[in-house]
Length: 596
Ligand code: ARG
Image (cartoon, rainbow, N blue to C red):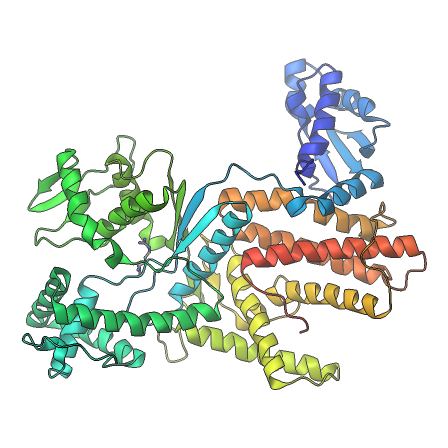
């Protein structure tokens, strides 16, 4: 069904706006907000304070004019003018119930969707032959959630992992391998046969080889020159090096997939820097022909400075003086490639803050050179650091940079202990496989919610104890609420109570009404999360909703309510809460276990 509804605040504002107009004032003054004094009222309007000067009136007199016109209106149970000129508003039980009923019947709870289009989210960004570490967690978790939010709003979305799979890092690995295993056919210039199917290394080998090679290249100029030579040969299409490169890719990608699977992070596109190498020469030529790129000390650059700049804005270097292309050359070519293949209306990039200036340069260059047309928005969402409890970047006990897999292990282990304890406490007998499955699902919620509940741009503290707690603003608490709802519904079914034909009735007490209020914020919060690329808005919403539900649950007897119509209404509202929580947890990127 087409949503025949607007966001709650818009609907109630329209009534207050009309009252302002009827009283002879500008209707725009009638905008309503959620009350910042919930002890006094549910909603408020400050329009009289804002408009009083214009009408040469005392704000309170103006507020009284408006309040008088709202008297007897079916939307407000209370519309009260209070000094110095606020309007305090409470909704009628009938209105809030009707709103919630309309939500329950509409597609996606009646949220209005914008005009939709194709959108690409560029996240993950792992580098081949290097292990995934704590730094890759945020890009994966936030990127996946943003992609799901864009998708929920009706867009055709593509997540692209954009691997670092080209350039010197690959040359380093190849050169180091040629020293360690010189007899491999890849290094035999005369070899014309088929290369072996097996890779001559494991992922652990690669993870040792890369840092070793990188270390040597920093202290040994000769070594570095050789590695650069290998890079160049690879790029020029050396048969053996290309074959070896494919082996490195296979082994590395298999390992990446294992890690991202554990995070339930899924990429539609497994492209990388290598994907666009062939289109770089044409792109560079176009930049020269267009008069954008010029020679500066042997390098080819594009100026991206603007008159209004207040900070240093270095030019974009497209080709270095030694003829090599760079990280940004690849990003520019990737924009060109994406435009040609998908004509996206948005490309959203996720990296840490250290790449802020970088992306500003790339975006400006893409605009200036016409690679990105005006109707394609380029957006960089940058995030802060994952810190330890001491406030500095999270380290392993030994002081190293923790691997992503170790972080997941740590959370899962802690979760496993709690889930076992929980099951034992309830006298449940559960198989090890079942316990593990629950621990994985709840652990994933712990890790993702722990990250997503913070505004992305802020640093946060990776705190296993807090993240895995079943209480407070945590993933497990949200899941606990979902599991509780599902378990009550199961119980109802066991008792032969009808959970299908339920009719939501006006609230009968404060916690009942408060739950309806919490529910009714869905469209506003999800729309903000969408417009601001801000999963933390969804966390805020599900936390408030979970709190409202749990208070409602404690203050009302749901299945034992004797008035059958009221019981049905409680069940209907509970079901709606569960449906909404499910949609929201999907957008955050975690699953609800059956029990926990
Ligand atoms: N591989 C890059 C890094 O480790 C991140 C890639 C981000 N995406 C992009 N399109 N540049 O820094």
